[in-house]
Length: 231
Image 1 (cartoon, one colour):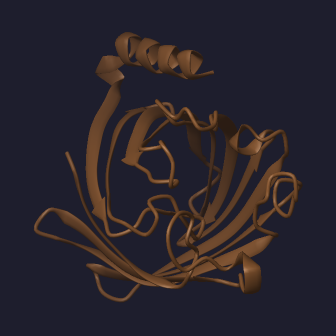
Image 2: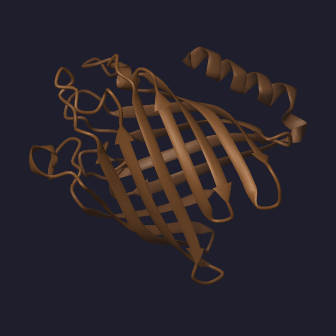
């Protein structure tokens, strides 16, 4: 899968470079949270991406971050290809295939693929993600999220998010993972001096034995700060 996505990305970039827009982003965050769960044991992360967007709506890219699962995992590299289009002046949509990889991760082979579809109406977005073999654990997982961004000023937005993780992967005792849960966030974002800045308060409905407040995969409430620059 990784070779297919990488090859497709390179092929499109070589054949259509004159019709493509290439960009790169470098980011820093105090905690890498994926759907409410820390991938860095609550520690900071440096992240980066390289993206290619074509005039016909096709795009592809690669994204990376440090991770910490309290074992020998230390790197995540994701590959993705997708298509974005407009239905009319108000509605747009997006569909992509993402492939998550963890190079050098000997404790487990967690590489897996996920399909993500999004439908947008102005500043309101609805996203659905499906992985047939989540984290290469043999069980399927779903994620449904709604996001809304409200412009407080020309430079600052209020960002609201709610997402639900559910499916066979969640609550599976053989895997030892969390039960179905919902993650939320309320934040602000904006740009200043060429930098994209954001601050958000994240929380979930997890409690009891499912709540982790320290170490790997912590999912306690937190204030997430990030700064990024796109070139």
